[in-house]
Image (cartoon, rainbow over all chains, first blue to last red; front, side, top):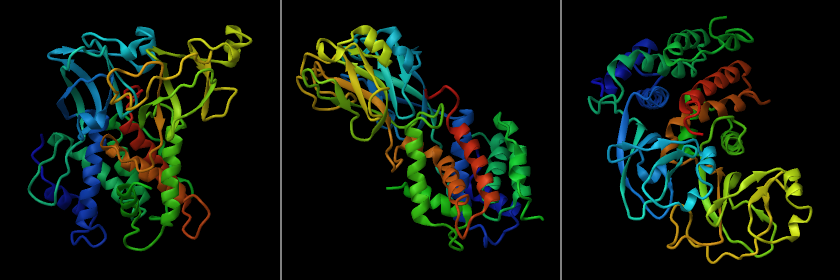
Length: 205
Length: 212
């Protein structure tokens, strides 16, 4: 959990954008982009996780949204402290072609896209399992609370990425390139920035 | 129905709240297009909306339509057994007369039939006992001799809570299309930049191999 609040982050971005009066970049717009970039960074880097208990039913298939509404993706399923083995869904048939109605103690789990997981076998009686997931980070407010979900040391990445997105409005291509060049290596990504310069830079001639 | 939060985000990113730059009908349509493309597998490695449903079996019927809203089958299960996804030539190897030999289905094919249909190899000699509920909330006992269809969906509302982190990617994908088409606000540089952003945010949301 970070210690930074939304209002401080908006102040800092307004300064970067040279818009301290929030004329071109209303504070609500900046806040929304900060919230969304925080979620994207956590989805990429898995900095903050959440654990949610869910009860098994008469099925191996579970909706992720039904487990919890603050999940980006499930990364682990546990039966008490015992982690189930993660199996890609195309391999379920190789584990057992009758997996859909297999009964017994859960041994494996499988993500089927973003919105569904399978837990196999289906227990004979209801059990409580735990889904460990990358957290869909909470929204900040233009106030002193709540605080950032991701650690404070990822603030530079957060602000660089949010700044790059916000600069799209002003078509500040060179500044966007500079911000992305700073942030993408930290996310383990690279982009051919030559693409951006096709046709010249409108903002700076 | 396009996702309202994504529409707001698009307006926010391009500055449409300050002066009207985009055609909201076109951006809603592009939003639908992207969701359809993801559902049909046009974004490799991006498996987003998936669901499962039962299909009632009719004795001797070979061909079935995909359930409403489903786009790509991932797995099809007959009774308690996952069917193999076969090719047409494999079906012929099973039996030249497989369409007229109703027993227990062991596989399905898609390739020689309409894109939104599949055929059972061989057709079932059973009829479903009952298909109330869904595989995620099945009746007790689980319906016998039913098909369970697990596949991708294209819910254009993109309303699932676990997909909220993809809104930036979806918004930029739409911006790229809206500003690259011929219009009074065409901006190829912005469209190219938006496509780059979309690629970045898709990569951030769909870690390789994590969702598939």
